[in-house]
Amino acid sequence: MISRYFQKKLVWIDLESPTHEEIRQIMAEYDILPLVGQELIGPTFRPKVEVFPNFIYLVLHFPTVSKHHLQRIVEQQEVDFIVGVNFIITCRYDKVDPLHRFSKIFEVNSILNKSDMYNHGGFVFFYMIRTIYESLTRELESAEDTLRSIEEKIFQGREREMVTKISDVSRELLDVKRATAFHEEILESFDNSARKFFSEDFGYYTKSIMGEYYKVFSYIESSRESIAELRETNNSLLNTKQNEIMKIFTILAFVTFPLSLAINIVTIPSESNPLTGHPQDFWIIIAGTAISCVLMFAFFKFKRWL
Image (cartoon, rainbow, N blue to C red; front, side, top):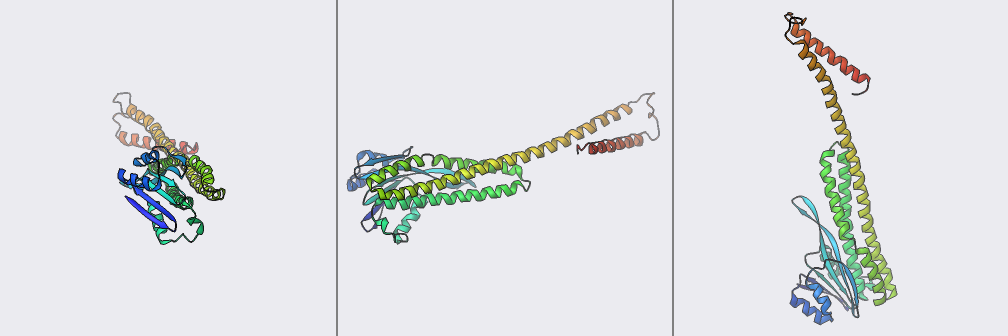
């Protein structure tokens, strides 16, 4: 599907899952080389930047968070950018929500009061990529809210429940980091190419794009450090609880084993057993057992083992 948006001399062509015929049409209109047209047919697995006489071609992958069966899944969405002087072409293979929102902004001119946006396609790319990074930043802020919730529940005694939750958030952050791993390298290459293709003054905007990326990167690293500390704290609390439980079981075993052994001995039916035939033998055994338990627990308390 081809969508076109116009602002003064600029045109933005948005291709969503384009057919071969639609790609050939755009290639003919904007003098796109067959090599690039071939790239638009299907997804490209690695990001890239290539400079041609009449445009700059970029491929970037952006993480998007979706919910499946109450789980947050991070998927990668590829967007191909062809940035020319009077046009910009985007090609994607599924719906990219930030681009959809940007198209509404583009149509109603809510941010087009800045005259620099009319100069060339590079400025449209700047506002477009900034919108995508802002959307990603909001997703990462949501992850930070989740981390704060996990922290509260850890100290409410729900450590076991948080083991899975911590792993889920950690996986989500890892997937986001993996999706944006090559952005720095690609944006640096675009910075060098764009200043030659457009003008040196455009370097201010390319550096701003880098700043948006570093903001995202900072959020990712900060969240990953937080999740590592939360995991360590959670594991420490779990180990402490398990050690307390093991100590209680050890003490119970230490108390019950000798008492059960003593009971078995004094209940052996033999003529030399002083309790055999005694009218109060049962109560003597119970009283002895109770007194022994009290003395042993008092000893454990004295030793601060309990």
